Amino acid sequence: MNIAAILAGGTGTRMGGDKPKQFLEINGKKLIEYTVEKFEHHPEIDAIYIVCVSDYTDTMKDIVSHAGWSKVKRILAGGSNRRESSKIAVEAALEDFGPEDIILIHDAARPNVSADIISDNIRQTSNIGAVNTVIPSQDTILVSDDGRMLTAYTDRSKMFQVQTPQSFKLKVIKEGHDRFEMPEVTDDCALVARLGQPVALVMGDKKNVKITTAEDLTFLY
Image: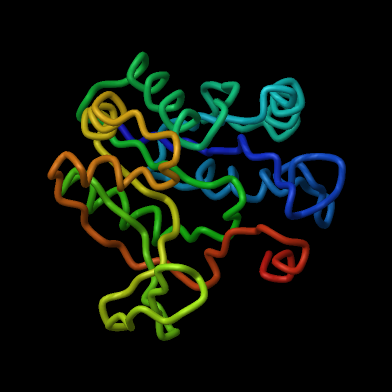
């Protein structure tokens, strides 16, 4: 079974406004609706868990009911940070599914994820156990130890920008959460990499951008 966990627990302060960005209305629909629909309509996704800001769980229930989505199984209150919200989704999924089943953890603010990216995540996770969606870095990346002076350049051919979904067999990401209590971690693959678990790379897409500021809304299609 393949489960999508949509993380919508952020407050979206950089977007401005009086509500979390995932609940802003764009062209007649809320941002999170565009994202959930990509998984609701994907034939390989069996269930969807939405982890959202606790004050908005009732709002999310109304959205799901109005949309008539059949795959949304749970709406969960998020934690105090992204790692906690991810763990909440993983533990809930393990109550309903088995350790070999696959969970795709995705940012609610990435509404342009493609069906091909989702399918590639499922296929590679089935084979490897953990997957990170990435795109090659187009820019030269440098390192500065103090933020003021150049320390070193990196080899751009080895640099990738991380997107989501990040996907795992449930037993793999659960062990990562159990072994490493790291609130500063904003990347689920960082947890499982510490286990020595191989992490495969799936090519993302420049369109799979994370909506962070008002200017980013121009990328929504």
